[in-house]
Length: 287
Image 1 (tube, one colour):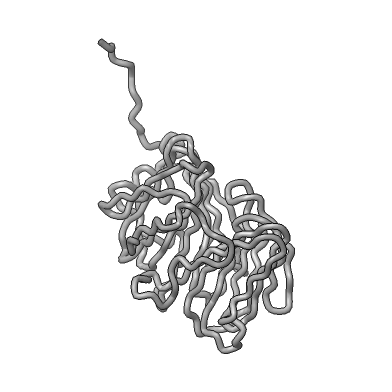
Image 2 (spheres, rainbow, N blue to C red):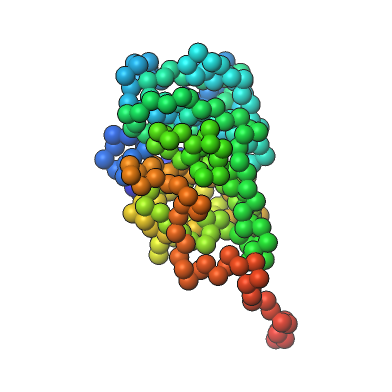
């Protein structure tokens, strides 16, 4: 398994928890733990390591699909999401030491993100109506980088409540329209990040560009983005691409501001809505 591009889960996940990478793994350069939990009919998941009140781990739970009950501390929430493309998620930012559990109604699938955190803060619940959704890139470059960006936690576009100052995680989603680009223009930031992908069709694929390297990505792939490397994405024609993006905060250098990253200057011209984009003036004669 590649440390940068993880492809071991393209056939999907079994029921129960599947750890893609753990916090303590040597290869985990992003300093984040990431798991997918799938539950069948009326099944409960409750990780035992979070029962201890002195746990130094922050957890975020993002609903991917299905319906059930998610309990955080003393409060329970009825949650439901059809799929990652058509609806916003329910999401939970859970401080260290707080109990949580997931109970399926029929089936449910969630992403679980973990980061070390010694601070205490109030849990944050983001309902689908709370998610900040932006039609980014609309009207630029003939629509070739138009996508939907959903800021869930920690991003400058989130509500103040969804940006706990003591959280160590920034999380969002992108819905990449077929044949178009996202994370564009190419940009970089000092905080480590990873992307987790899904496509609307089984055979769907796209491309992830990290500096001068290119990776073919498919459903359930993960790509790690580290060391200030520039990154951009593209989906193949006909296939919608969704990805979860997760950024690990750096003490003293937090992912904040608008934008909180740096574009490569040679490509910034594309952000001008009046930029001149080449178009063919005619079709040459074919022989």
